[in-house]
Length: 411
Image (cartoon, rainbow, N blue to C red; front, side, top):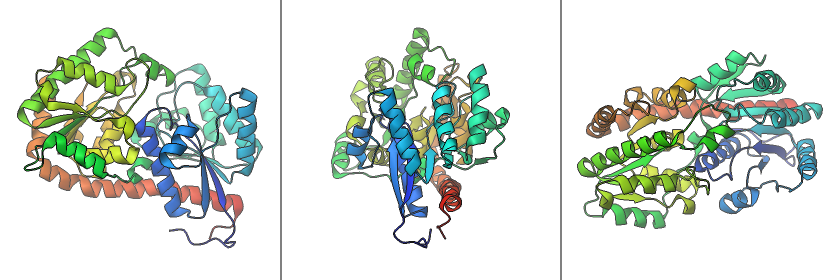
């Protein structure tokens, strides 16, 4: 815990750059985790956020955001003003290292360097950088960073291969500091699904993206064909029917809410339910109404989770919910192992399925194992998560050290 500064009237200005406000609840959960960890370590800080939709983020989470101006010059002026005020600039994730938007990153890191401001990658994720421009610029912004911490082994290997002349520290995901919350409204909604006396088992399903648009933004060369989308939905419908027939009620949990085709998880789930035989035992939770804390609370209420989203797994781990992971992204493209990395970190690497090959029997065997050993798995997960939280706390301690170097007033 940070002690008071020498000058009690000083406020440390921290600006966070993140992906919150894009409709992705995982990014919102990461932002809240970053803020929670910073507040614990640096209580005398004023935190402001650059994000995709400032008004939405401010309204939903009561976070101080920087308004998004319409003109390019207006935004540049806002960046200059904020960076001049900043004692520390944090670039958070999910995945700030990806193979596109390199010139924009170069501008922002160059501006921080010009103004002499420390800038830090905070528990970041990284996708492979393969383009000539990306492999030229990314090592430069790593070099210009004051500190780089990453959340998993895969991201560490991506950055180490780029040789950015800056130590990269492997910590853990900031979303581990997200506090799960289950409101009375959600309790009532879940009771309506499971009943109350006795409660039926509740098994959640989260999927990854089925969108070329999404992966294109990240610069990941994956072709999500219509055939792949169709096979994936059919595969998950068969798995959901097994869960509904043998284990309990099925709850589909959207993380990404968007108007774009195949980006909105809710639309994907509707298609999957249409393919199910046991439609009567499947429900979609209304994630658009829920905060990131509430979504984590819903997952914390589950008896078992099947997830192709990393932060579905993270949220389950926060409440020691047994889980089976789907290594969603095509592993041959080098972006799928972040899910396996997390499962290894919590000692559950034997419960990872792969989307490639659609091995239905393997998935059912792992779900059956997780169900029959769920009490043991809960006991195994809890101490592993506590160890990961300790690693994640290092992000904020490094940020505090950068502030100490920048202003010389934190004791």
